[in-house]
Length: 283
Length: 308
Image 1 (cartoon, rainbow over the protein chains, first blue to last red):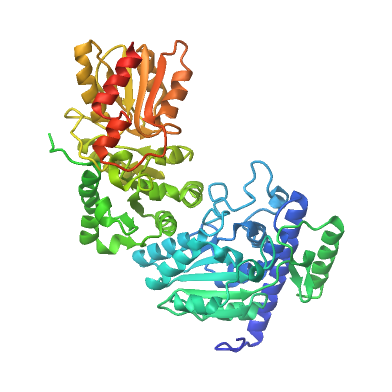
Image 2: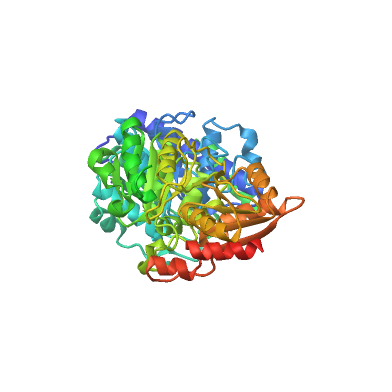
């Protein structure tokens, strides 16, 4: 899929290198948050760190007053990845890195917009974010606003029936201005998605529901960006982003892709060491 | 006085009126526009009517998204079906503080022969557990119109509970609905009866029947929750007996709301509750109300017993 439609010139390459550095910094921040909290979904957060980085630092019309595009983290347990992007992007003070999951913190274990205005929609119990995203996209269309509502879902989450109610509604009503990115890491709490309840053939199902579907390497910033650029103006778009839970970098995975295990102090130190080396090497 | 009608009928009429006045009023439907009386709205405002089909969870989420973008969505379905999606209401509406109005029709036993899978008998209990969600249940047409004006201009997540059965007007001319304020619809002494929605006119009728026994209960319409604690305390404190009568499950509804206030009174009155103690069952509505003692005769007998 890479290269389709977009020819990567030197400026594009420089920009991709910028996103890569930001994504690595997000990984460092989210791991520090989870390490200091002693709690949090490291694997799930690492899995979508690249997707969130491309959205927050490149594709989204982002403004801290939340007047631009909308971002719904339907897989709310990956909240540390979103908080990390907010800290790296300068929207949240770096001091808050130690407040994840702490009493009275704005950085709740799952995103809570009544505590943190930089969260567009409260999520946590799975399966609900896409419906709210649909409502927001429909409302913006009614208001005549040209903007995009992005919704990041987990693949395991797509076992929830409500997700398919939302896919059905958005496809049937041709809700444009809506992009669902599915973080397809094939891992959920009890094992692989394939072993638990397979989604296959997911792209065919989504197309049958009336969606424009793309599949990308969810750790390739160029592929993600190209797919996010290639939208169908008359239909909602789904991007199935193939990822690896716990991915730190090329060939490097934390905790063998576990859903909710915590890195030991030694694993954490090794991960930080690795990520800092990546940054020093310019990536 | 308006002719006798159901609060869902008044809702349907009022909805169109307020929608003419307020552009941000929209409707999210779950294949029940006829039953919930949103069909006239659909006919007049097709662009502001969102049909989600028989998929209440998604409908609630879509409504939350619409509310976040400045609309005031009314999501209408049977109360039992809507509040059955409790996790969606908890998170996408409640914890998201989205200004959705959930409209739950067919409150209580009145749906009759369709039985307990369609009866809104636990809806108030569920909605009371969400701290920012307000509960409304009008007792007559006059109150519906005022509540709709209130709901259209308010932004709180809300649950509007409506009845299927026709009801007479219980409020005097000039009645003004105020959120959380209980309203005395019949002045009396010794016993105070707290009721909500469709039970209010039945309690008034029961009070009339008791006059022959020398019992003159005060009847209070509690049409919105959380209720003003001080007002309930004053009313309960001024009587020897307090009774809650509700067309809802015994646990979690109006009885719990009033009971907590009565418990805190220094010289608390005796407190009794008449409500549905089980899952409910199928049957003609009038027979169901008789069986569960929630008709005028049953309420009169219960109050007579409590007043002894």
